[in-house]
Length: 197
Image (cartoon, rainbow, N blue to C red; front, side):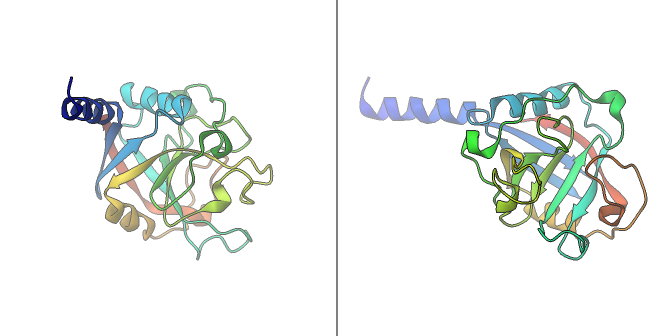
């Protein structure tokens, strides 16, 4: 095999192994690339929900902006989606793959698994707006310092993410360990489906 054929083969294999999914929302599509090579358990968990169609007709229900987290000295910017308070459709939580283990960082457009206590992440996910180092291992957003499990990134549709983040908040609604009423969207953005590409 000559060098050109070998390079073509390697490029083909790497593009096949890069798993992408499309989040079809009422505000537009978001395409995510998943880091199965770095965060295999977290990606497998996310794909388990996708393949079981458990994200169909769920919502992005929470947005965290600089203007709606006054009581928290460590500010972040994210949008969060998932099953919300519907625990009947949740799979058991998974062991957390910290950014210390994976080498990933919470950068602009990073996809990550939401959680309360360490290794309690299950169905809820969020997307970062701008770099959020306080969500990495050792960051101060969570008192335990374990951070969150980054496992992918937005490759198309950050304009949709920004639109969702600008929604009006302050609506009492489904609460869980991650919710603050001041961060709940008054009009949650429906996720019609999430599918593998």
